[in-house]
Length: 106
Length: 121
Image (tube, rainbow over all chains, first blue to last red; front, side, top):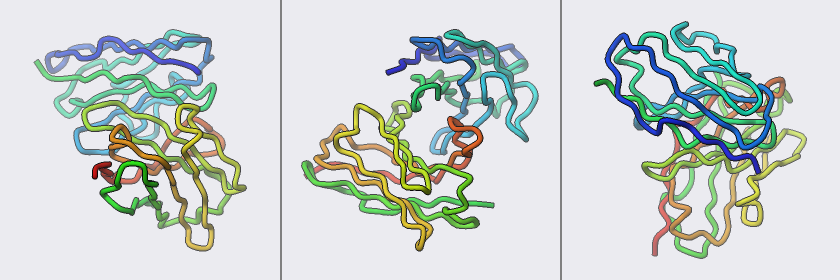
């Protein structure tokens, strides 16, 4: 089984700050990595697919990078509506989600 | 715009079988372009992928749940279903049904709103 880790588990940042979340896979997953945003009480929403591709309609302040085992998700300028939990998800072997990173406004 | 809606009992007794159905509207489940998944989330915790089914009937399951899970599809009703046997309190969660495109096998692009299932006597 492929295990996913994320760091940090939570963070607080100011509006306009650059926010970075890292995700690590327990083995090489190439670029088979997606990022989702989940707001309280809502289903997750796909933001980034194949590690770095922005889903249609998603604001360009969101971006992703990485390959192999190490991946990064970035919000270039944090907005109040970005308050959510962010999950990475691998699909190299079945599907596994990371534990999530909760993002708050400072 | 395709929509997914979960339905089923909100309360299940320990050791019994949890059964949920996902009804697909706004599109045909048998179009062949998608796979159909179940994902769950215990309160305050992260997402756990349960498994998926293709319209061919082929399935993949989370190894940690495989012995207890069955996912099936009923194309005549435009529905797919989840059965999870021998449930315990650890199976209490919000259960989501979801869709993913075949050309992007890991993507989950449409989600149901989720249904809460509690396992308790």
